Length: 103
Image (cartoon, rainbow, N blue to C red; front, top):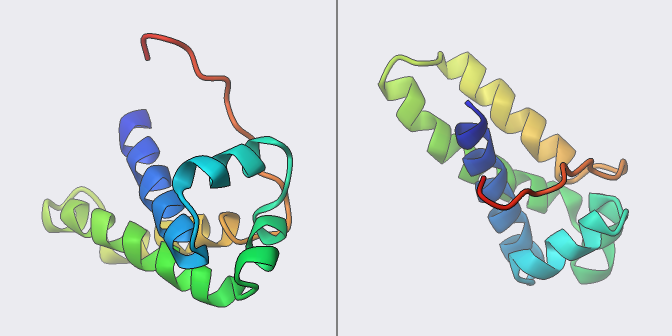
């Protein structure tokens, strides 16, 4: 399950970075530095709604495969996509787990 969640987060981060016009690495650096997604979005583009929509679309595309295989319902996919979009555009800093080599 962790790998699947990591893939969703990566898709969401890629979409957010693309929507504000930066690469994923600088976005992650700012988020890991304690800035909230809203603080990162504002100077680059300023439109949290548009970024949220891009994140939700990207995550929903990945989740659609799980819906097609019957692993989750369409409602669950919508809720997960919405929740991740809210987290990646919100005003609260994100918590990042320490990365370990070999994982």
